[in-house]
Structures are given as C-alpha cells and as structure tokens.
Length: 225
Ligand code: HEM
Image 1 (cartoon, helix red, strand yellow):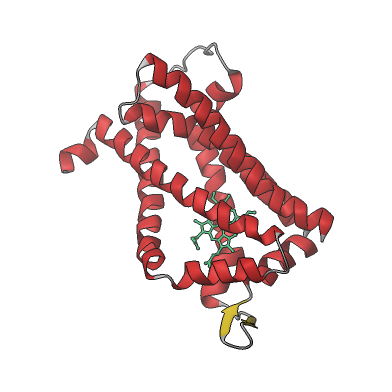
Image 2 (cartoon, helix red, strand yellow; image 1 turned 180 degrees about the vertical axis):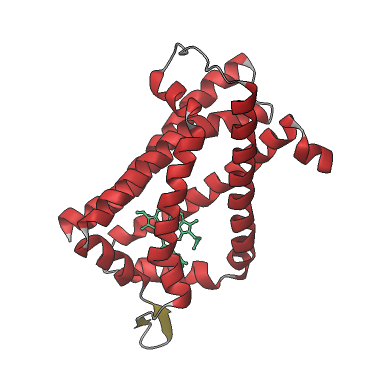
C-alpha cells in the first residue's frame, strides 16, 4: 500500500480516484442546488434537510473531506516533483488551446478553486453547522427544517460581489474539470485511441454543464429575485 502511495503511477491513480469521487459529489451537489430556482424554497429546504440528516449521506461526509485532502495533497506532491524534474518548460503544445492551457495549469486552477472553496464553506456549511439558523415548518407543523434557502438567497440577492465570485468559481471549476475528467479516465486505463477522443468530448460536456449549472444559480437570484 505504501508502495502504491509513493510511486508516480500510484499518486496519479489516487488523484484520479479522488477526482472521480469529487465529480460524483459535484453532480449531486448541483442537482440539489438547482432546486433553489423552483418554487418558494420548500423544495430546496426539504432536499437540503434530507441531505443533512440521511445516514448514508452522513457517512459520506468524512469520506468527502478525506477525498479533498488526498486530492490536494497528492496534487502538491506531483506538481513539486514535476517542477524539479522539468526546470525548462515544455514548448507550447498544439491542439485545443483551452484544454492544453487547463492541463498545464491544473495546480494553479486547483489553488484558486481552493480559495473559492474556503469562502464557500464559510458562507454556507460553517454557518449551517455552527451559526444561528432560522427554521421553517412544513406539513402543517409536522417538520421543522433549517431555512437554508433564505441563507443562500439572502447572500445572492443582497451581495452582487458574491454572485460574481460564484460565477468565477464555476468557470474555474469548468476549466479544472475539462482536463481533470479526461485525465482521470485515462489514468485508470481508458486510454485507447477511440476512448481518448470520446472521453475528451464527454469531459468538455461535463465541464460546461458544471460551469453553466453552478453559474445560473447566482445569475437567477441577481436578475429574477
Ligand atoms: C451556486 C453555487 C453553489 C451553491 C448555491 C452551493 C450551496 C451549498 C450549500 C447550501 C452548502 C451547505 C450544505 C449543508 O451543509 O447542508 C454547500 C456545501 C458545500 N459545497 Fe456548495 N454550492 C455551490 C457551489 C459549489 C461548488 C462550485 C463547489 C465545488 C467546487 C461546492 C462544494 C461544496 C462543498 C465541498 C460543500 C461541503 C459539503 C456539504 O455540505 O455537502 N459548492 N454548498
């Protein structure tokens, strides 16, 4: 096991597996967040309540945190080693410029995403777990849940700079994923000529869906609420 963690291929494999796991989280996270744009907030509050109280999701929370830590830790090791091994930069590669720019700047994009994540966790997760939350009641007083909808809506409606920040975060995420998704599958062995082409397309579609999906939420509150 320690051999796997310290070999170059092992490190790439851990980046891929943790990255794929984080992508799964993002897909669920975006699906729940899109509910913010439907109805008066009940749909989103009920879904957020389900996510916060469901035992299976609770088990996933520390695994998710560990996934992030491993992903960032191994990204740092890989980047430092690559810098040492390659003091002279490669010549500019041909091909899709945006994809090759993303691929060369994965660590920088990841670092900027990390700053976004720190602000994002403070905005919502920290507030929900450790702050004072307003509660709402549904089902004629049968259920009381945190009013997470008002927390998110309040931030996006009252502070346009957060709308801008979240749109920038979504674009950074899209760029990071446009290379990361494709690269993750390539590392785990889907690297035949046919699959590389297909995965490149799927990676781009996934990256655009994530970037657009996460951007339309702040835009919705900015312009329609
Ligand atoms: C419109 C954009 C977004 C909204 C409205 C949003 C909303 C939220 C909310 C309300 C929470 C707290 C959930 C809870 O603890 O009950 C949360 C947590 C979290 N978000 Fe986001 N988010 C957005 C974008 C993102 C993006 C782009 C990422 C990743 C790059 C991300 C990653 C996370 C993580 C890791 C957590 C902590 C784990 C969790 O509570 O599930 N979010 N988000």
